[in-house]
Length: 264
Image (cartoon, rainbow, N blue to C red; front, side, top):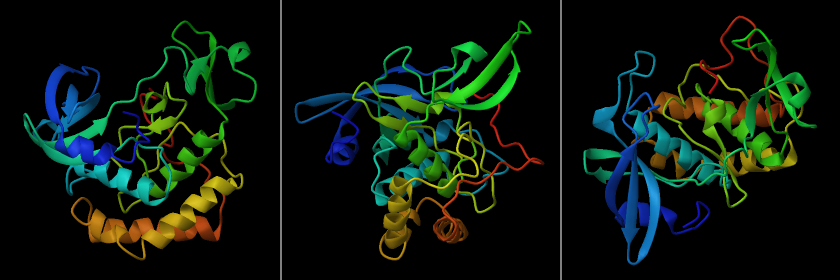
């Protein structure tokens, strides 16, 4: 089953989960599972709420709920940049279940490279020295889906867009994952996707924002209400309106921490 399958959400809600392993690099409990329903089988990620570590700066709701809310926002915007994500019961209680995205090794969209190895057209973000003292560049792809994902991160107020959270699926799609610390009412944008800072949004991103803005005037706030606060929903509306009013990628705050650490 592909992340673009319109039935993926229902499949994730109804499928039987079988835990196959744990993603040990994750800071919260993240379990790799097989899921099957009515003769269809796939892989998914299950993050039980009981495995979350409390965050002082995200005291409301749950990380699992924020992951679902981020998916609902992307879906309402008409983009398939976040894999289908639901909140459901699992072997260790309620949690977030997200369809797994298969990727091809070496087909990265964000990377740390020697200056001469940066692919033509990629956007350099940061110049530094690696652990051996050699020059290195943090850079990302300049493709249209990554540009739209970067704009989506602005309205999601994504506080943790690491390089490893931007996936190039074997189906050719681009997907963002790990949205547990998004949608805060205060500005917390931290991302590696700063390559378009100060530039006009592409038409695809503007169209998605108009679609999202319309959804925020109908059913989307009710869908988000179980997962984030009213103040956070109001802040989401404000971010969408502000970006539509001035459709330009923001510049990083020179006094803040615009890039998450670690970057991957």
